[in-house]
Length: 204
Length: 204
DNA sequence: GATAAAAATCGACACCATGTAGACTTTTCG
DNA sequence: CGAAAAGTCTACATGGTGTCGATTTTTATC
Image 1 (cartoon, chains in turn brown, green, purple, yellow):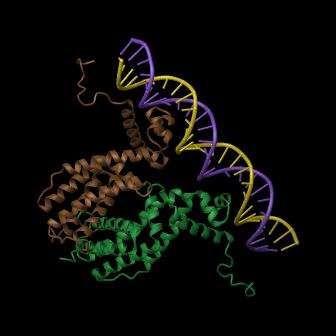
Image 2 (cartoon, each protein chain N blue to C red; image 1 turned 135 degrees about the vertical axis):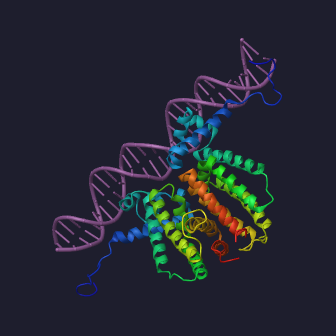
Image 3 (cartoon, rainbow over the protein chains, first blue to last red; image 1 turned 120 degrees about the vertical axis):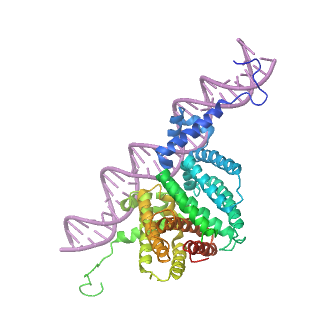
């Protein structure tokens, strides 16, 4: 009991349930790594946390809800990280910086990102989350392309459409590479960067 | 009973089971379209065919096996189609022809191709099938890039690695576009073609 | 620090899809 | 035709899911 009146100015207590919720998501993430989504059962998660299935259903209504919460947590982290990144003026630098940041994101959160992609079809909420995330990236890529002199617009050879294709290229390439190793991821990044630069007209 | 000794030189009879197998795969494909993979149950398939679950298990050991067979059937069709396509000498023409063919493939088989991609992780056999298919495409793209003057090799800015990234770009872009409409698919194709041409150094 | 309300936990149950087994029927072919 | 092979059915055992009501623990308040 440190201090007389604990600094209750903001938020004294953390509900026990808050801790549990985090524990559930952490366990879920760990199980996803070992067993994969399909093999993972609600009972497994509960057991990992040290409670019964019944108790787990108090927090989340299904395995899908648990994973959706996990994806939400991760994706919010991505958004923060993206907002916090300074936007370089010079297109070449912007591209290099963006790819570097993307490598870091996939190194840290590859597992959950892959899971999100896999479940985008099946779980509508996750689909929303991921497609919104993609839109952020597409907007960023579009901006860089335009600054590099690519004509703005949605026609097939204009910035917006190209950005979309480049985004999917990066997503898919990183998806596969992140399953292999950090080295592969770095190589994949270099390749994507090269194609992006070329598409932006920055490499002869 | 046509003819005296039926021309048995090759294959007189078609087993009843052969017809059933096809019916099962057809029904599975139809159900995949309405309900999606997860919602589709073994009982649904059996009912669609007009037999009981028990009978279906005589042909396939699980829902996964049915879908794997369906993917196999489709993918073999893709391979045939790809082998049959004449290889143009001139890179520009080769690229246009390849993209046109790809649009046709996705128009015809988009549903099963998307399913194959979705299940690549979960069902190892489908993963094999699809990754082999991708390798064929990557090899083809690599060849075109090299003929267009891109240096051969596996370094990040050389033909092989670039082909891989371009293949994933096309896969993912078509995956999404084919869920929308034929028009979107055509537009997506134009965008991918433009990026491919640019990457090959065929557009200033 | 006692206490009542809210939060959390448990165990049991009903449900549904899966996959298997064994008996039965139909098809195939000599 | 008749026997073997191929195909089909019903019944059952299993395992994961989600719900419910009873019970215990936590939290906030006096």
